[in-house]
Length: 362
Image (cartoon, rainbow, N blue to C red; front, side, top):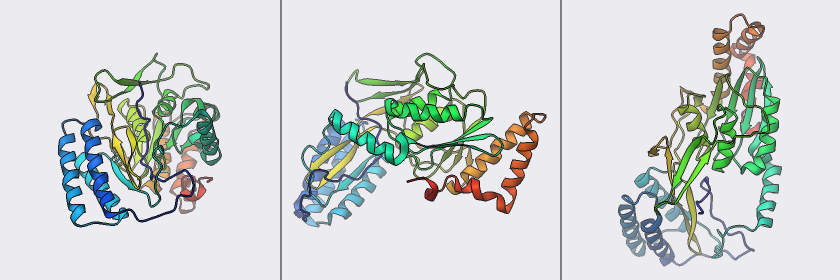
């Protein structure tokens, strides 16, 4: 069975050759909405809401036939409408100035997939952007995306090996827009006690019996990080599989979340070409966690702070917690000094810079 990967919303752009840009006929937008309505009726994840959303799309198509709009305006207004009707930030309409080939979203060949993976490695090391020890023996791992376990596995293992002796761990997901659900499950496996095939989430489509279970990994390439505090940083860009990972950690009581409330991308989605110039991201798969269908996919932080302050605040929380739990530890003096440095005006330099976009190595 094939269920779409957990995808962050992306701009739909023609990838095959320099097709000449042209202005599509005004009727194409209305046609795209009518096709979209049919796909929503057939495949949208919530079959109880599908008729209402489809009817609204058809009504909008009639309006567009009378009052045409530029492609970008159609895309923006329809995306706002679909997200307002569904509450899912995955849902969206897209416009491409260049004509998209009919097979733009066809499954990639093995060679194409390997080439894409190589490009990803050069850009962000398969999602494991950075791992370092901060003052006070606090570990920091910056996960920029979640990629397939067979690609993310070794960089992630190397990072966890580096941080294995830290007294607390901060996982920075502030710029993680999602990616592969099994990659997120692999990362979660390093932070959860080893339980054979622990079910994290079940994906269900509208087709009876069509499900996919995402479970923890039993064997890992580096030691698990257990019995020590974990903090997860969230920002406006934290989305989709990053929210899934965070939800697993938060619900299990394994991590505290520091940052901002996330947007909510609850349902794995399929990219659909509607017409040469229009496409949509269609949520087709229901996420079920702890036996319950996920309705609100957003994450509410345990400690709400602006994203740019999340790293420093997580460090403070970690150091304060360590001092309270282990006041006579050999590192207690070091933790106290680290806290004082964070409180000093000049103490925001290295730590504050560690998570800024300009220092992300891109």
